[in-house]
Image (cartoon, rainbow, N blue to C red; front, side):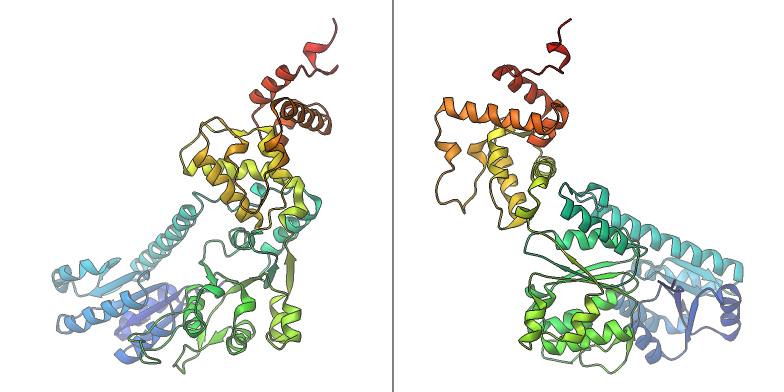
Length: 460
């Protein structure tokens, strides 16, 4: 990815001020000086700048106020710096509510310009980092935190790690609930674009009549109800990553416009004729069979080849059964934290057996919802069978109908099998079963399980 120069827009700068800005920032910044109000507003409409400089003169007070309103409406996060004569600064008190970043007195010095702009960029970077940290308080977007016990899924994660360092388009396919959205975010936050915006759009949740405007924005008056200009999601994602979930649901018309964005990095807003350039990385996802849609004339073949530069298929949860115990524990930790029920530390062996014996057609999403419900219901320190609710099971699990004696026998056999699979290492066995080592130790004593390699069972 070519590093993009920061962009600065200045309004009504004198030739001397313009020369000082060019001397301070030329070559390092993309500089745009406008003297006509209409041209200045057009620039705000078509592009998001890293900072905007306004020249304030007392006789133009009302005009400057109008410009500030326009900037905050179209680009509320853009820092604004006002320059003025020293005696005019007292008149700027009424502008402080408009969230000015700084006020510089004329004449401008290159050193002061450099210092101010450097501070502006540092603040924007800090805001992006804070936003990233807020997003990761509940979700840690790290490849190291992904549960990948099965060989197939481990290979998927290894590929995504490689893809994250590139700028190529990724197509993630897989059934609903397999983690497409989470993994797309993980790719972004481990890529060179990590400090830039990550914009997510679920194409199936937005009515077809509004999707084009949502993606590309619209001009005022372009259709009924368009009472003001709107910046679309592609513009918001400029410099970062845009994630289009359920891309197989979009119309052929929007597909054509999307193809142009990917090829030319440009588009026009709905009802507009000005070309807008963007620098984005696209990650697309779908649970549809796109080649079948192509054969049916519902999806463009050229777009398919353009978005599937790096294809990734996520297996269903039933096909990565080895991940279930560790994944269940990870989801349990998340639920107990959010619900403030830290006293719950794991699952009973019977509950874990039920989790491992079910196909989970709703995949990770269904498993997470089931565990969250169990955490709400459970009153003990371990999630038991009575708290695991799987609506799709029309008949009770055989485990639930066993008498106490057969249930304990089943539990003992389950523990013995897990111990054997984990080479009789109790810590690893507890993790596999989704219970704490303390609970496993209690069960071992209860069922009189011994092994010659355990220290307490070795003869002196």
